[in-house]
Amino acid sequence: MSMISYEGEMDLEKCVQMYEEEEIELPEDSTSGKLVYFLAPYFFEKTWIYDIIVSLSGAFISSAVLLVYISLRDFYHNPLESELSVEFSPLWTISHYFLCFTFSFLNFIHHRKKVNIETKALQKLLKEVAGVDLTGDPVAWRRIASRVNHFSEETGYRYSLFYSGEHCMRFFVREIVKPIECQTYDIRCYCEGEMYSNFWKNPSNKALTERALAKYNKSVENFGELSHTAERDEFRDGTFERFRNIFNTSILYFWVIELGSFLILLLTFIISMIVWGIFHSFATA
Image (tube, rainbow, N blue to C red):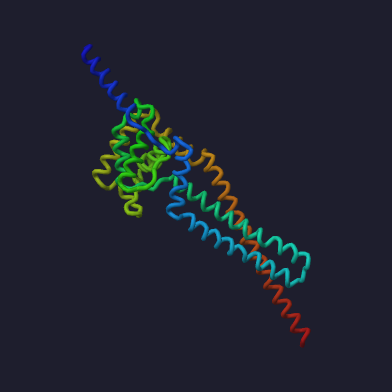
């Protein structure tokens, strides 16, 4: 009995020693890591160029409202409005550019957090979840995230997949647990840049997923409640997500109001031109 106890203690010590020797590196551990995680793909993949072009296009398109307004102003010969328009025109274009650029950048950060994971990296994640002690290891999810990040970099992916251990856990809950809970089995992954949702249909992937899910299920007391809470915390309770949702909603309403204003001004201008044409034809008759 004492021999078994001694061997158990030795195994535990070896396990602890192995965990202590393994270095865990995640972007959340340093300020530079945080910046690199979010900004490196943005600049090195030249996403910023696309955002600048789209923002400039949005700013120029929004100038249509200003153009119709100026045409209507000149039609009625209002000198005071002419002075105000000259000062207001650059501000109008610049503000629309920054609104469009901010909209694009916030959505990039949002999609960066969602993680587009390759098939091999997803398999590695499931193997780690199935193999790591989720209850006995206090930094289990950090360890899993670090290992998957290193694996993805070794297989050619230039950037870290997961920002933190919590980010990794939430991804697992959202992309693995929830589809199985809802019985949709829509587990998505990417292969050569294209998204596939048939990961579950592969027998080996299905068996691996079931092993990881069983291990995760044992590590929580209330499986359904935890998964729901994790997803809610990420998408609803996060400061960034709240700010992004408010900003996007405000932009949507702003665009609707601007489109309505454009249509009203355009209709007013057309009616004014028609009325002017009718009166002018009678005056010259």
